[in-house]
Structure formats: structure tokens, C-alpha cells
Amino acid sequence: MYRNSIRTVVFPLVLAAGVAAGVALGFYVGRNSGLPHIFRPQEKYDDKLTQTLSLIENRYVDPIGLDSLAERAVPLLVAELDPHSVYIPASEMEAMNESLEGEFDGIGVVFNMATDTVIVLNVIPQGPSDKVGVRAGDRIIEIDDSLVAGRKIPQNRIVRLLRGPRGTTVRLGLERQRIPELVHVEVVRGAIPIKSVESAFRIGERVGYIKLGQFARTTALEMRRALAMLRAEGCDRLIFDLRGNAGGFLDQAIAVANEFLRKGQLIVYTEDRNKKQLREYADGTGTAQDMEVAVLIDEGSASSSEILAGALQDNDRGTIIGRRSFGKGLVQQQIPYADGSALRLTTARYYTPTGRSIQKPYTIGRDESYDEELWNRYRRNEFFSADSIRFADSLRFTTPGGKTVYGGGGIMPDLFIPADTTDVTDYFMEVVGRNILYRYTIEYADRHREALDTIRTVEQLGAFFDRDRTLVNSFVRYAANKGVAPRYTQIARSRRLLEAQLRGYIGRNTKLEDTGFYASIYPVDKVIVQALEILNNNPDK
Image 1 (cartoon, rainbow, N blue to C red):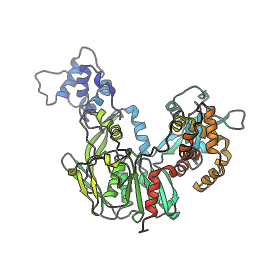
Image 2 (image 1 turned 90 degrees about the vertical axis):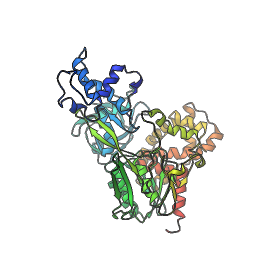
Image 3 (image 1 turned 180 degrees about the horizontal axis):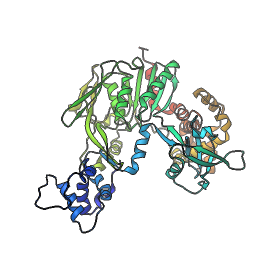
Image 4 (image 1 turned 180 degrees about the vertical axis):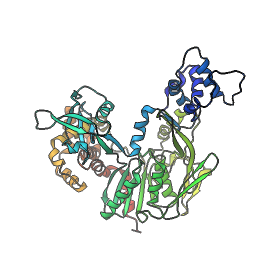
């Protein structure tokens, strides 16, 4: 979270100057807000920090660049606040904001570098690369006439080479199957959308599935489109997957919750240091008010995900399934500095409709223990047994429907599903850990590129795999050639998991993208299987 690791090694002068340099939000303004050019001891200062700044700037034996000093010191100051207040340097602002803004400037391909070569997994339809004929399966050998294949170039550097301001041009040299020489194309960079709805498809009779990866600026719009698409396919029940969704914009979580709640139902309220509250209510325009919904959460579901899950749970709307969520109940406001950096400062707490704060405990300035909290849950067996989870009676709340819920450390699901390691064997861990399984799926997609490129629906993808009865056996032979000897007892135990993983990664190599993955992997996902059972057995539908 952008914490600076120099806390224990910075010499006292830097630390003192850092505290001074981090004067709340006013450092860059404060330097030009009437400080005397030469400090006069007899003058009185209300603020020791401002005084220290002036002393260093005007009296220190050598000239000091306070801007660079601030870059090292402001994180030290912010680290003494709660775990979610952070300083974001200007150099990191673009990457921090990009995923939340809903688009970036680039060439429009999804790629991987599993073999030290840029392999195009998918091309965004109607994007810059699609328009000039870049294809899934192409290898990018040259970028602007510079060799990039086989040179162990870090992936983040490849990203920088491919991205750039929209309207600029990048020249690619592509290696393509059955073409002996490089294919050269010039791609004009453009705006590339970032999807927060990673997948939406009909997963069962009258049941839709939506996987939401984050809450970005376009999330509510994407959700309404996904819901409309599922409605058109006959779905009146929904599995809404928020596992691993770390949050994002608060207003988008409110807008998505509004889709499911009736007019006048409280969604969330925030409270600042002065006890001033801001309450958000559903306005009755939601398109999914009549849809039965099962919401999936886990320890990676945080912030806006918890606002949404808490709003539905506290209004007795649907069923929350999975494991206890992260436990982030603090609201941040991003405040910019003049140099392009920003302070993401906690300014309020949020509460679910019953009045729960789900912020887990923390100690000011002790990020280490806070960051270890999930590991401590694992050690206490909380991922595998609901009985290992304890809530204080003082944090007990009751929903309008009479359900008991708790605050003080995440959203506890209505139905706890333990982490499933039943089919995870040493063999499975080795072929995954050594990246052999994933590399096989890349080579498999190359061999079947023509057929995979014709797949447009989940049903077509399923039919394609059903025709290949040798997928797992072929992979086992491949893994043996890569140095992992078959262990047939373990392979038998992991077979369903291996096949689902293979199908999932190959499915992601089609035009279905992430939908190809989730549609292939869900049969071995016990949380989704349980959600399907609940929705299919609901007597009210």
C-alpha cells in the first residue's frame, strides 16, 4: 500500500524534517504562505512542524531540496495513521488510478510472457490491434524495430513499450504460425476500456452469473448492461461473485446496491470526525429488485464489496455465501498535491444499514500486525471452520427480518463454505507452481487456434472440450517431458481439478476471454455449486 520501508533506517534529521515536510495537506502551499525568509528566534510559531521546515530551509549548513526530502518523509508521517491512509507519489498515480478510471491508452491486446516471448492471448474487438490484423496466438518479436523476444525483459517494461499516448504509433514485428517471415504492422494507440465486470453468462436454468473484479467509474453502467443481457437470456436469479474484489469507488457500490433494493431502503451511511452522517437510500429504479441473488465473498472482498454485501444482508436481500470478508470500514478521500502526487486520507467510517462498522481492529502505526491478520485467520483455522470465528456479543445486530449479524471485522456470510483443498495434491501443486500447466494451455491453443477462433458462446466452448477426451492424459505426458513424473494416484485424485484448470485457461484463450475461464472452472468451485443449489431450490421462484 505504498508504505515506505525506510522507517527504521532514516537518520533523525530526515525523520524530523519528514514530519515537518508532511504538514497535513499543506506542504506545497505552506512553503509560499508567508513564512519568513530568515527565521527569527523571537517570533512565535503555533506550529512546530512549520518552524522546523523554516529552520532546515534557511539555517541548515547545506542547501536541502525539501521536495525530495518530502518524498522520503511524507510516507513516514502517513504511516502513523490508520492502515488505509496512504501517500501516492506522482510516479505511481497513473498506475493507481488507471484501473479505476475504466480505460487506458494502448494497443488493445491481452498478452502473457510465460516463455520469455510476448504471446498475444486475445485481441480486443474493434481495438487498435484488431483493426490492423493482430491475431490471438501471434508472438511479438519486435517493438519499434527492437528485439524483445528471448531477452528476459521484465513484463512491466514491455507494458511501457506497448502503451503510450493515444494517437501515437508503435511498429510491431509478429511471428505467426505458417508464416516464415515476421509480419510487420503499425498500430495507432487508442483508448482501451478496462472492464470491471469480468464475466457475465447464463450458468444454469434461469440462473445468471456475474463476476465483478472491482468498483471502477464504469461499474454501475457495466452491471446494468450485464443484468439486461442475462434477463434477455431468461435469467431471474443471479450468482453475484465478489470474491477477491478489493473495492474501489464508494458511489459505484451504492449504485450497484440500488439495482437490488426497494425504494427507501438504506444502503450505507458514513460518519466523519464531527459525527456528521451522510445516508444513502435506494431510489426504487433498480432493475434487479425482483431477482433472487446469492452474493459470493471471501477474505479478499473488501471496502466497496463489503458495503454492497452488507447492504443486501442487512436488508434481508438474498444470501451471502463464502468466507468472512476482509474488514475495511474506512472511507478515503484522495487529495492531490501540486506535483501530481496525492494523499489518500481516511476521512470517515462507513456503517451498514443495521449500524454495523465492519472495520477490523488495528493499532495506529502498526501496519505489520494489520497486514498479518489474514495469515492469523488461516492459522486459527478460520478458512476451514466457521466455529473458529468469534464475534463479541456487544457487536451483535439484528436485521428487520430477525437475522443476527455482527460487526467488528468483515461481513460474515449467511452460509459459510470452507476453503477446499480436497483435490490439491503434490502433483497438482508442482505442475501449477512450475507453470507447466499454463504453458501447456498456450501450446494447446496454438495447435487448435483455428477451431478456438470460431467459438462465440459458452455452449460452443463446452462442446469443443467434450470432443477432446484426451485433454488430461495429453497434459500428463507433456508434464513428464518437462520433468514432472506421473504420480497416478495423485493424478486420479486431482483429475477434475486439473481438467477444469486446463479448460479454464484454454477457454480464456478464445474470444470469450474471462467468461471462457469462469464457465469452465465453476464445476469444481464448491461455493458456486452451493449457490446454484440454493437458487434452484428456492420455492418462491
